[in-house]
Length: 283
Image (cartoon, rainbow, N blue to C red; front, top):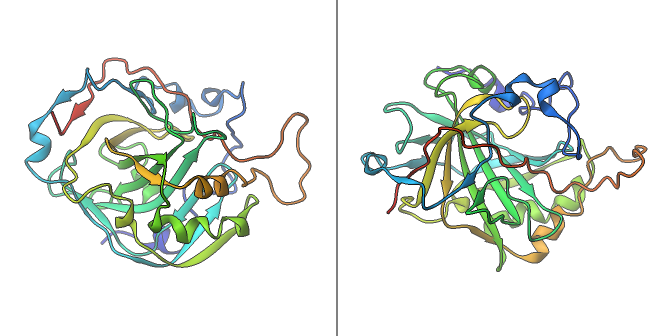
């Protein structure tokens, strides 16, 4: 039986007090503090759709997110991103994941730009989206916690969803309407209900790319299976502007010269593909 304490009570990854300081400011070199960030198989990457290899084996066992509605979810501004910490046990199986292994959904994270022309961490044929969502899972078959799974083989699986601007996203409304209450770093608020299924693009879940990479935030550990859906979600301009009002600092804190304290452009630049292969579950 996996240890549930991290899911139910402990602070999410990278919210630990002892974690070294890092940020997205120009000139900040993560590799000097986090050696894994210098690895050969880092994320994010540019997805060149023409070079992706169709792999029919990805469809032999359907990718199956068995997500349940989460009650009393905590939405957190950690100064780097917004996280939805999930308490209910939701799992992901099938697709590119090892047979018979369950990957438990730990949290949802958001990366966005200050303008609509940028924001996503991954790019598709060098095109960026205004936002990218990450559903972070850890292998609860092999490991007892997400901390144990990070950096291990088959330890972490992340579903990535690109986000475009259009009509309002009803499933994210519960989150966007409370962001004004957690404007500053360290603030959090509990929402009564959140359904992770509302983030999935379609019922068949066949149109995705897969590659092996790393976390896109420090410590940038490798051993991550990335599953990136081809078709983006849609949020309204009003919804994304709520994210752009957030702050990277504690309320009342003095800002460094030249820093406006706005939380945005919180994406890592794309990394070299090296000799990795991008697989596609569609032709």
